[in-house]
Image 1 (tube, rainbow, N blue to C red):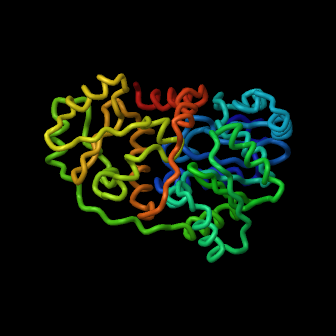
Image 2 (image 1 turned 120 degrees about the vertical axis):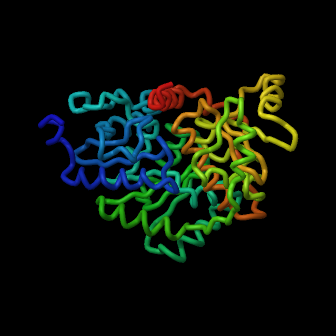
Image 3 (image 1 turned 90 degrees about the horizontal axis):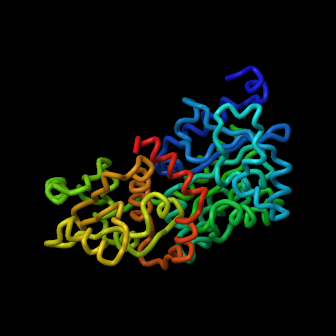
Amino acid sequence: MSQVAARSRPQDYSDFLQLSARLGSDITRTQGAGGNTSIKENGIMWVKASGTWLSQAEDREIMVPVEVAPLIEALKQGDPRAEKATDFVVDSINESGLRPSIETSFHAALPQAVVAHFHCVNTLALAVLDNGRTLIEQRLAANVPDLICRFAPYKRPGVPVALEILKVAGDRPDILVLANHGIIITADTVQEAVERIERVTAALAIEPRPVAKADSQWLEAAAKNSTYRVAADEATHATALDPAGLKVALGGSLYPDHVIFLGTEIGVLGDGKSVNDLLSEFAARGAPAPKMLVAAGKGVLLSNDLTPGGEAMARCLAEVVIRVPEGERIRFLTDAEEYELGNWEAEQYRQSLDRQTAGQ
């Protein structure tokens, strides 16, 4: 790190990196390249770079410096430059050379010094419900009544969701819950952010339904001579091992990163149907081969082409669906919302970085 770059960073920058790395290392809070953090000082905001993993915050340079005021003005004026935010990067101290997170605009819109956005599986299990707001409000009122919470309806990540957040930013919310997306915790100091993250996630914690072990022998036989492999992470198999959770998983897409890294359709292996039979069915209707296959009561197979980010999202799906309360109405992403995500350049860029990480 150059001396100029070092001097430009906030005094508690190392603590901020530690917070980011810890947040990124807990898969129940952050998965793969999902989630982002930022810290502001003297008009400059250091925000996670697009496509990078928070878990690596202390190991490599993943933060990008951005000028806050002109970015906020661009957001308010409908300036298209607010989408990528690359025109607001302070190039002279951007040692990573990367572009800022696709959600940089909402970090700028929030006035607090420290902002942490992550895809907490407990929050997601409630934020995908029709009455999720009511259930979340009840939990927060009972456990963290001193914190201000606001809610935002589902909008595509980037400028659309930033504009929703801008509407309530003046209230200086401590917590923002984004429907079908995740949670944001704000604070004036890093230590305050650490404490709030722990308090809020504890308030929203849901006991996952227990599941049996995957049938590894059956799965190995099913994957033989195919382009799929048995999911290495044992917890990933829970999607197929919990009947209520499997119904949710097959009902539609729950949140953006699932669409980006796993696609919009999960393949289902039934009795007597081989992987190749299933792939033939997908090909016959012009559908891309699924990234993930499930066999009820058996477990999960993943495509050999699946990136590390995709594997993390397969685990995330399992963690979410075994927490979704049974009997509740779910608000899945619409076809239009899925299409919007799949054809968005910013997400295609993030996927390309994930493939580079996997050496594909």
